[in-house]
Length: 209
Image (cartoon, rainbow, N blue to C red):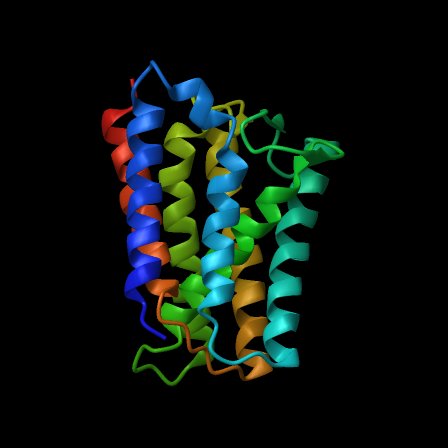
């Protein structure tokens, strides 16, 4: 299946949201569809998955549950990340956590594993570490605009450092689980989704008023 239709859809969606979120006139309207942005990326990832197995499903479920579960604990206890809560921009929530955020972690896990698994490195632990670093790198970009766009809110810089360190550990665990499943990922658009998200958030950091 050609990847170009998916790339075109991603480009149109990313450019539209970038322009909409960085221009005051339409920002509120686009913020109302923050969850849709995540869902579209998820749909494209799933659509371009070339082979479906029980192991693939296990990876998807584990990515969602780990991501959503850590977010839920963090919001309810304010212990993991300090004073931490979500805004309204990511849509419908359960117990204060948007259901879309679990899919966001699924996207990050899958796309970064797709990249790191193709590196000419034998050690799965090094590959898992690289995958986790790729995830945290995108998290670092997202943090720069998350509060201003009412995605989520962290109280101070120390919480942000702790946030990234804990997510690196969680991401490493999930990435390691991927290698334990011995899945061979084959998805023509996964790495493009990751790269597109990086460019998108760099654009937000640069142009957001």
